[in-house]
Length: 495
Image (cartoon, rainbow, N blue to C red; front, side, top):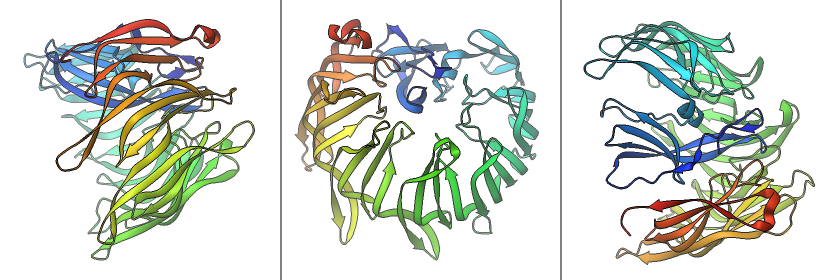
């Protein structure tokens, strides 16, 4: 499982080295959701991993299923674990340099990528551990298909003067920092998700770190969106006003088009899809209502019928959610629609009901009830995974089944699941916990070719895994052999 590069999977997870920390080992743990590129489905998909800092002066990056991503040594217990969500960066980038007597970074630091020195990358730290003079930095989202560096000067850890972005030895953006380390004047800023296939940049002006005036959004050399920022004595940070056209963070072929007033969305917003950035197709949208206080717009809320896009929406994965909002809360029936990329047939593949609670005339909360059919974050035409079961007051209850359907078969195959036990507290709130034997799917379970078919089998007690969990894999070309055990994980701690 990993970032897909040039059509081949870069396996950044070492599946043969599984890890489960004991409670005494964990000094600090953070749960992170990252993304990887699925070249077959032509979209980014989520992956979950943990950052664990233990008493052995190690930072361990561990996938949710227990597989090592990377182990780093650290010098100073006060240092927070590296918080980048970029798994390929974590796996392949290593910074090399000296530490001072107080364990602060000093002198020259350089970087390696996959064990090879990166020419010209790095810079100097002062004796106080602050970046000084000229640096060639890597962007936090640097990866094999987004090789962007930034070059400029630091003074006591603040960027000053001109800075530029470099992409394959070409200048593609940048601007000027004032003496306070604030962006000032004309800038070309890269999207946080900038990469080879989505080279999005923002062109406009800063004043003391705040965006002002007209900003245009470019895909390479073509304007695809933009809008206006407004600044006054009350709103010095610059707020969006008027019509804005904004590409999706992860896929610029998805465009959001609507009006801002006082920095909040109002009225009708449309969602367009532009296959190959040519003909636009209306694929979603709905209405925003606005709340005001002292004549200022403070909040925008969705109302009425909406068509929303699945997070992995793309040309081979036309999945939408259609239902109603009241006071910004989902209510009533919501359906999941899927358009087959080959036949163009439109089918309802899932959904369920939302109930709600009111205080006076206002809906304050909504929650799932009754039977639901849900899809996974990595759902795609090549590997369709469904979760089927019941909700009570927004909590899963009873038996839940996991089904799999590939693109060539009509029938779904039961492939996993288990039981949720319901407990009612004294205040009538409901808790649901996994119990007993479960079969769970790997984060990126797919068709067995582009995405592996890996499952985990074992037991839960009070919503916690315990004992031996088997890791099993099925070969796409040997389906008749079923799932074969490839590893196991021993869960330590309380039983």
